[in-house]
Length: 368
Ligand code: COA
Image 1 (cartoon, rainbow, N blue to C red):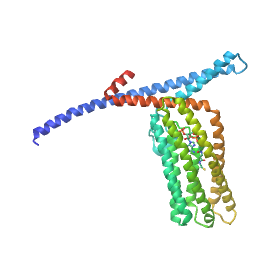
Image 2: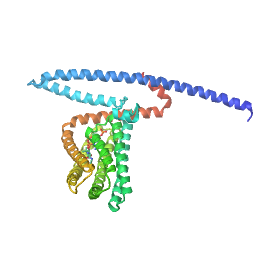
Image 3: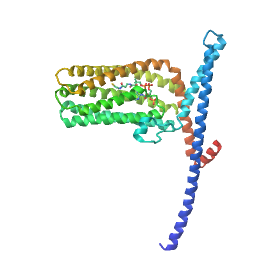
Image 4: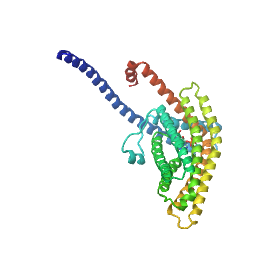
């Protein structure tokens, strides 16, 4: 190739680069607009909440005996307040949220917000799959530990537990930033489990450990099976959530979601309660072991306390979840409705943008 043709090629590349620069400029403009739109949304949400609180406070004066007509209007306003809360929560899901202190310490000041409802569902799906895979590995390792009594194998399994629970706390904190309603206890449960696995890792291999070892491995086999059942339950719910934005009639999907949830729960609960009693039994065994045989290392009593804590926390939270679900039925309905609408809107916008790339700019300028 002679030098002139190389020069020509360079000229051509130059033209393409100018296009790239233009595209990048438009992209930066959009980013700037995005930022200012986000600020407007934040302010408007704040305003909506402020006015809603004022209305709710004023509604309190109608608490006593009032006309039927007034009562109907009060009820309707209360229903609309519930619905608006769900709508505001859903709008917030498309806006960035700040990471909590824990994530900031671990990851630094990085934004972990997922701004698309469908991507949030996908991230949750990924979290459930991660738990499933690690549980299968844990089940196999616990099973081998039941057959063979090798210290290295035992330590590898316990180290896996430390890493697994630690990773769960990070993933759950990211889920929380992205609007998950996961109860504080389940997150605390995984922090406590990380500590418990850490204590097991440094528990010296003596007589006390050998007495408790088999019971601990059986417990892990059982927990892995329960967690597999939990995966089936959460996967079923996620599948129905995904269907929310795809169905024409959202009411049918919401009904399906609820009936599947209750069936899933009634199947799962007995297995969970057996697991909790197993935790209480572990606490009791370790408590006795702290006295006989003598000279028990500190790990025995600490593990006994941790198992007791897990038993009490798990039992109380699970017993609380079911009546709460019954109480908050209508709130849940509005939440699912808003979520479904937001997923549908996203899909429609995405389809529109993808089928007509040029129209993308047109669409955005219309949105101005
Ligand atoms: N771990 C992680 N996330 C959990 C969770 C858990 N144990 N329990 C509930 N969540 C999440 C849900 O997925 C949901 O997330 P979303 O807001 O992103 O959709 C949110 O928390 C609210 O869930 P909620 O409606 O309160 O409960 P649920 O119907 O999803 O699940 C149970 C209820 C009881 C089945 C569930 O909490 C559970 O499996 N608990 C047992 C956990 C346990 O005891 N583990 C140890 C085994 S011995």
